Image (cartoon, rainbow, N blue to C red; front, side):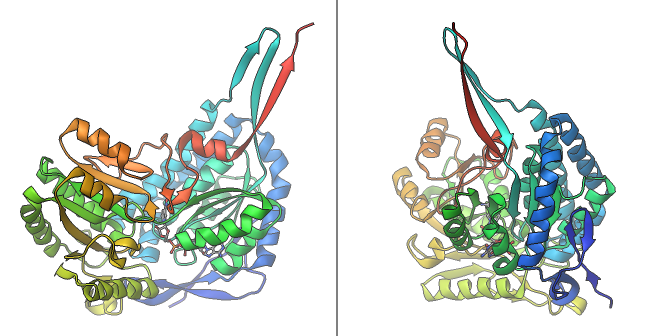
Length: 484
Ligand code: NAD
């Protein structure tokens, strides 16, 4: 089988890595290598940063409407190629094709169309300070932005950074995860097809410790927008902060899903199935700690376990598969090691708890049954550390105070879900739970205008809407005294 050779996209062209060396790209559903990824390093990043720096003056001075047209053209092309991109994303990541078709790729398209229009309505402030004095704030693009993204929602999160950076007038050096590079590569072809000026977006593939680190260290890359693990984020901050780079860090989570006795049972159950296992549980916003109030605990547990037992884990190309493969062998082993840890910590596996062996070409793929674990307290490692897979714990609680303490007991604070029909309790809890996003009686409903991001170890800064456009611009305050 010939393997597709992915190329870097630098200065408007597809180019090989300067070293000439490549990394293997695996298809999680078969466990086989199916393409090759440029193993880029500092020299490639230098070329990309040089191209981005050279392109900045022209791009930054285009009107918002002119930039908007390019972004809209990219969005339209993504839409045109939706099926190709969905299949590529599924093959690279292991997720079902239907999920990439319904969620990932439409969202990548919408990221571009959202910021294409947002930038046309973005404004800055002016203040009439007193008679004869006004202040106004200029918001100008900064220069070259570095965008680094993870593997779980590959094109979705990659474009969530790139689109606002470009819309605001910056040029970009971006690196997708080396685990899922294919749709970023297809995006470079799209940029060429729509005639995006050379150097405006540069995509460098490779490992985090090489290409990623070189982006963070490069002195011409003035801001870093990063999504990934908390440990990587801490490392990036330690490198970038002394260089006074602007930093946005979207990191890990260990999200509570809190279900009160008075919830809409069927809706809570159906959504909990998704918030636990969608994308093989590999969404930073998945609820991995499920707290159910005592009055409905047994009933909820039984229904949840029954439905989970029936979930189909299978070939990602088959529309009947509710879950596909885990993204990599390394991650597959990490998840299984956490299931073993949960047992050591005294947990009982109610369903799942093991790898799944499929037939035929998928016999070497990395599949895990959706897993529910009971009998652990909030302080154990299983309930404190991010597993990032189809593994959830379930635990009863009695009072609001008790569950708030459980919810806030981890170092993370990304997202939380509350299920209750009691309006005042919902607001009270939303106020008390330490989390950047609180969903009440829903999950993963996103309005792209709202600030997105986490508290505590889940990150610094916010993405989305005006927050993103503010991050990617530098405010300059101008004060005029026009009195005589
Ligand atoms: P990761 O931190 O291993 O890698 C993320 C990206 O950083 C990759 O592109 C990687 O190559 C790069 N990288 C690694 N080391 C680097 C370094 N030293 N310098 C620069 N770049 C480096 O994370 P991952 O395993 O790809 O993704 C999973 C993590 O991402 C989970 O913790 C998940 O919660 C988190 N995540 C967070 C959000 C959010 O919005 N908060 C969204 C999705 C995923």
